[in-house]
Length: 208
Image 1 (cartoon, helix red, strand yellow):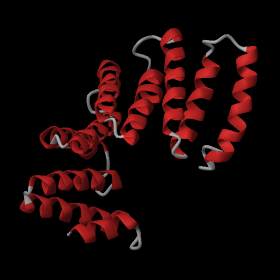
Image 2 (image 1 turned 120 degrees about the vertical axis):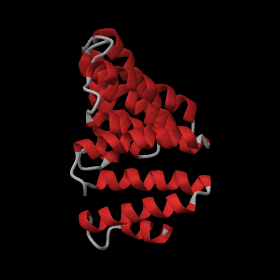
Image 3 (image 1 turned 45 degrees about the vertical axis):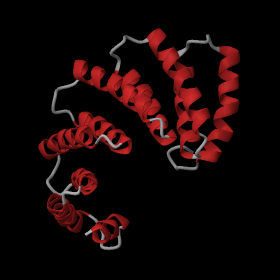
Image 4 (image 1 turned 90 degrees about the horizontal axis):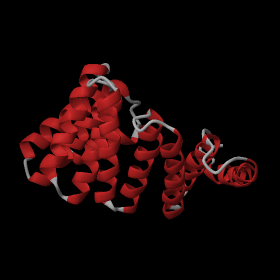
């Protein structure tokens, strides 16, 4: 049901599953961390952010007990998810803290041009932007864009998103020339990669 984005149904089935597993497995069994992860994801998507945060931290606690410190599951599934929940809560310092923990694991386990870095830098850029730290946001989005340009096809939608987010920073900085430059690049990619009625196109036209 999570895959189908029917998150209420996912919660309906995951809660009894969790109770059965709690009654039959040790408290730090890896199976529990997976159930907590899926349940937290469903809570996050239904706007139940405090529940999502609490359950994500339970999942992280188990993973820290049973997995090596630099294990990808700790980074991709726990630190990333906790960071995203804090961002949704508007608690940007905590979001940045967990994104940086994720980034440290990635630096120790992935090649420097791996596309996972692009997502992490993007998320850091968004948190800094929401804090009003525009220079830091610009640095992060530039890093994300460079990785995407090296690893993806030129017209890939994620590249358009990077250009768009950089344009927002320039808008906040009052740099209209850069704003228009990045929006035009965004538009060019979107015209080649998205259907004509896609909402991202409407948003780009509106900002131009």
